[in-house]
Image (cartoon, rainbow, N blue to C red; front, side):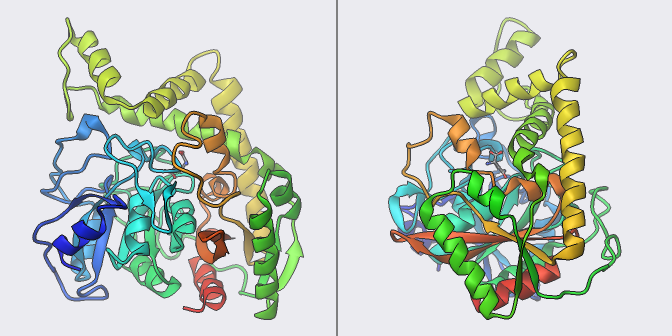
Length: 430
Ligand code: GLN
C-alpha cells in the first residue's frame, strides 16, 4: 500500500500516529521491499517519536535505534509510527494521549496494548510486519486481540538501544506478523549482541541443554483459578487437542509461585518506570511549562503533560522504592522474581514449552475498563511471567469468539526461540 492508501484505510482504525510521506527502501536483504511499521517508542533518525505522550509531542529522534539500523540494512521500508499506550503503560492503547486504536474485527472493541497500533496495522495489511515492545505482554496481548502472531524474545536477545525505557529489566522489542515464518524472519533481522546495550546476549549465552521432545506443560490449576472466560477455557482445551493430534505430549504442570506474577510485575515495572521517567523534566526533553522556579517548572511540566495512568505509575513506583517501604515491596518483589524464574527454568528441564491462553478474555469494549486500572492490570495475568523470568514467549492466533480473535501463548526456556518457531509453525500452519 502507498501512504495515501494506508491513510484512507486507517481512518476507522487509527493504528498510525504518522504515515511517512516518502518511505525509502534501504539496503537489500531478508526484508527487501517489505513494509514495516514501528511502535512510536522506537527511534528513527529525523522522525518524530512521542511514545504517544504530550510531553514528547514535538520531539524528533536524532539517531537510529539499533533495530531500525538493522531494518534498513535488511532492505525494509519503514512506513510509519504506530499508536500505543503512553510510554507503553497499558493493555488497550486507550492510554495514548492522541488517539484510541480500534480493533479491526470490531471497531467498538480495543485493539489491545500497548502495541495496539502495530498489531492492528499488520492485521489489516497496512504494514507487512511491525515492531512492538513488550514489558509485560504488550506485543503478545494486542497480537492475540487482532489475530496476528507476536513474539517477545529472550531478554537481551534484541538491543534496546534507541527504545524508550519503561521497565529496563523487562523490556524487549519484538516482531508482529501475519505468520510465524514472517515473525521468525523479522526476529532474525533484529536480534544480536550490541555494544550499545550491555544487557544484550550472544548466541552462546544459553547453551542448549535439552533437545526438543515435543512436550508441552499446561499449568491447569493456574489457568483455571484466574477468572478466565469460558470461551478462552474452551479454546485452550481445543488447542491442547490440536497439539496432541500433531504428536505433542501434554502434561499437567504446577509452578506454585505463578500465582504471584501480577503483584511482582506491577511492583518491579512501576519502580523502574518511576526512575526511567525522571528524565522527562521539561528541560532536557520535550514540552516545557514555565513555573515560578526550577522545581515548579518540573512539577508544572510533568503535571500538565503526563497522562493519568503515567502519573499514577510514577507515584506508585516512587512509593515502593521509598525508604521504609523498599524492603517490604521492591525487595519482596525481587525475591519473588527469583523464585518464579527458578521454577520456570526447572520446569523447562521437563517440558519444552508451557501453554496458556494469551489473555483471560477476548478484546473488551472501548471504555469498559478505563476507569478501573486494577481490572486492566488483571488482563496481563498470562503474559508477565515471561518478562519477569526473561523467557521468550509467542502468541499464536487460535480461532474466534463472537467474531473476535483469540490467542494462545507458548513460553520456552531462555534462549529457546527455536522451539517456539517449530511448535508455532506446526500449530498455526505457516
Ligand atoms: N499491560 C502491561 C503494563 O501496562 C504491559 C505493558 C507492556 O508490555 N509495555 O504494564
